[in-house]
Length: 363
Ligand SMILES: [Zn+2]
Image 1 (cartoon, protein in one colour):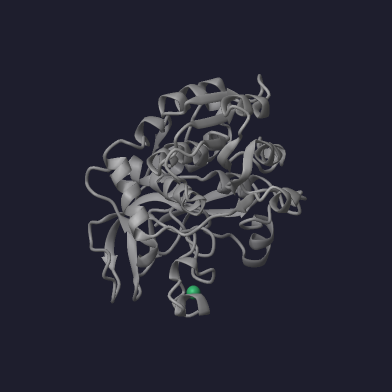
Image 2: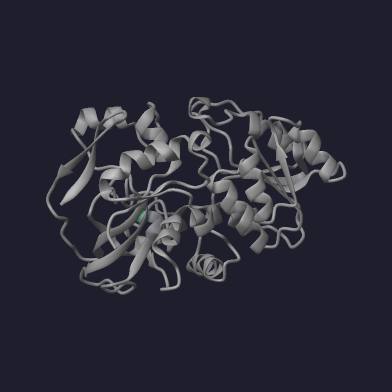
């Protein structure tokens, strides 16, 4: 079969490799649609230590099948003992790590928190390929009413719920979302379904902010034109936000804010409010956590979605309360278009895309 393999930073090649085989608890899937994630685009382009150092890995192991964890794929073969899926199901990946079923966390019943199991696209081959073999309990099927394009975009949406769950939004809470990339747009939409009252978003692109307004943002601030801290404090009557999602931090080399938005988050959150760190910050970054003690701020990371949460997210997409299809601007045809999808997804300002560019691999 054909699969993209990484030979070094910025170097991917379409190779002919053996067809994957099925094993107990796993399924073999045929890729229907795949899209690169922002994290993958960054990992391919610049030396990064999270989640993987491409240069180091390739030096140690040679050309590697990496990336491709955001996909819609069809189950074509089911391993022994698999109960949640059947041949013909269309699936997406539900968690960054599958359960190992052996570690202390798994044995304690916290399989969804396991950090030792395989990670699709990172520790095991993902779907920048015609076929893949995947752990069945890391997948969930979607109903017929969800398109391949929506299913491929479900993974980052489910991931956004990972960050909404620990925030425990209460009905009417004022929610601020700093950054309107894939995660920011997802969090804006899903937080409303989880009870957010007033929603305030920031970004640097007017076209994106116009979309945010259409998706329900009450206040949309262009942080390159207006001081976002002042504007948010004005919009909350000087009170600050109950919950702030920081979705724009990260490597400035990749067009992200460094720690600027995190420092904004601490200035716009109300006393004893919550900040959720969604963006991946550069390694070794220094953060002043004194407000955590002095102002009772809760500084949170991701939580763990349950099957109930995932079913709710699917329902939100089915009922169109959460928009995915209308946000996909670039759909390419054929596995050979994968590098183009990386190029588009990495350069949103140039291509004016909102979510990742998608690639149709089979129909
Ligand atoms: Zn485990």
